[in-house]
Length: 318
Image (cartoon, rainbow, N blue to C red; front, side, top):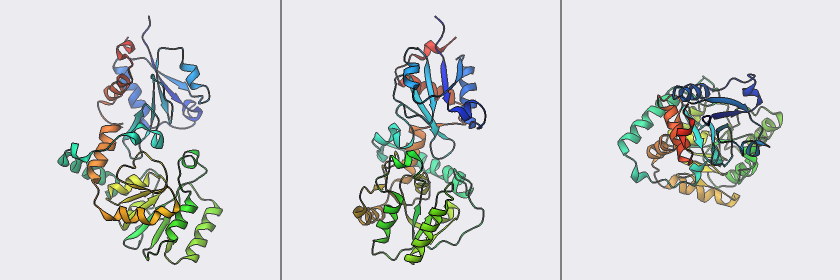
């Protein structure tokens, strides 16, 4: 019997080369091949994927997948490079991490603090994020409420929000709190409608400041971050900024989550009311539950996750 294979499933732009894959994919493929495993690329058809693989004995890794199957893992960048999902349930709000219990007591404070320092150096000191950021330093009011918007045209946002962005901002404006509200639109949302809506809000309420600043300038001055489920929420945790979420995420464990507009005031009060184990949480999320793209053990880490699915990895060897 020929050995089982590992298929890397990609949507058409990556499969046909019109979109450059992230280095993770090449590193994973070469690492697995060095282990003597046959690795092939496959064109992903989301509508038929599960039925397409049902009769084979191979293992399948799906880019940006949310599939549940004993022979499938779902892969995507886990908010902050170089960490990636290789998850049995999905990615982001659909990942298995959201259903896990976080216990800071089981994590060494020294290793967590060291990890946090390195993460902060890579992200904050370099003023870098997932999307390109302005280089210029911005003057942001101190102790502001930092609001990071997302494009609701994106299905993953629409399907996971408890409050849409309009309801989220209206709930903030309804609070009797003089703190400045600094709002940053999503970098890919340049629509005239969004710009007009935000300009109208800032004219209506003097607390509102619309900023196109580097996220690290905003987070460094923020008292609290409010977002639906933007990756900037977890980047705020690197700044040790309390987080209020208005949608379903997999990094909710040390955040407060708002499900109705009337819950905003209490959520912010709770978020500001007690310290959070930021370093321990970041270590737990990224080091325990994700894999590192640049790790020399990337292929072995992937095989361990494949084995955890109940798949006999010895069937992959030539």
